Image (cartoon, rainbow, N blue to C red):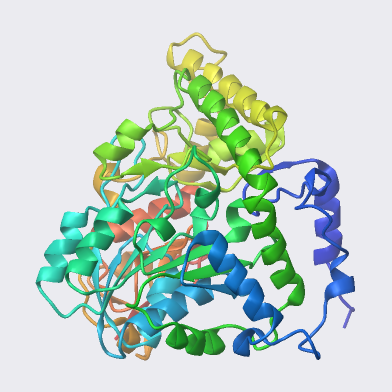
Length: 504
């Protein structure tokens, strides 16, 4: 048998030399020359274990306890926990500490899969609140506090979990949501994984940390200069017991936490609380100028705050550049490809109709200008093609989509205004469904059956189907169209044969 060669390190090294610019996480953007963040040492030099004098993250009594207490003072929280397994372990711990086994969790349907996993592990019943939907862009909006109140009035809810900001930067009114939850004595958990930069800049939405949420989970690495997997869990108020959080973190977080990661967390917070605040103000100015100019695009579209508020959103993260191609011959997938192949710009995510570009304070005026120039060049081509003045009535990307799909017209989502708000019937609780025997069937034969797996596009990892939910016709159509658009659909039994898992 021929010996295989290692591939990852070589591929990463080659990619780093290609010069593609990352409009995606992590927030340091590989820009070590722009103080990442400051004089951070060679990671091998500080990669130790729990030796004498360096404390233990899961029984912190010395320097790690002092470091986390210092972090809590920066954020104004009662407790702040360092997380080295990303926001995922924070969500798992927060839900486990706030809800009794077999209880009920009320959560936004557009929550990350870690929230679903937490509900399954704790054998929770789940009730959902649904976001609105923007009209022109098709992205999900915010959660209405009145919808939370209506569910709480029915009783029996142990905790509420919301995601704010969303993957697309939509912010829910957390202050109003917290007030509603607290009137019923119910703790509010906020997955603020994509909003770790909020506390450090006046030009950004207010963080859930200061809006009354009981537990807030932030991924430093997503939008700040910190290493991947570094995150924080903040607690404020008496509704979630800190000792129970610590107990569950011992379950969900590695017993060998990386001192490199923990040092990176501390250095990131120190930087952001000092020089980073000024950098964030300058960054906000760069974003204001960029967004102001992108409003002039004729074919492509940048959602604004007015549009977000019409969909139930409260605020918008200006650092999240969402560009819609709806109404043009391009899908989000093809728009991302144009930026990648033609301009060397790699975006975070491409949806059916739009792309998401993550910017951070590490992005200079020059690189934001590269993104602006690329979008305007593509926009001009699309506008001229639509007006019949371009070199072709339909760009080659649209022709390729039709060739691959066999469609006569450009491929689009079925019933786009409602597809993102499919509300499957729950037949079995998550924890029971995950224990059931399952088998594979062709997607076309799954209608009416019960799903045996999560099905979602990753990123961002929001299930269109969860185990135990009924598979409807519109769900089948949506998954099929996602596949034909080339989107990264996960959870299918076989992507090649287009089969899914069902429960007998």
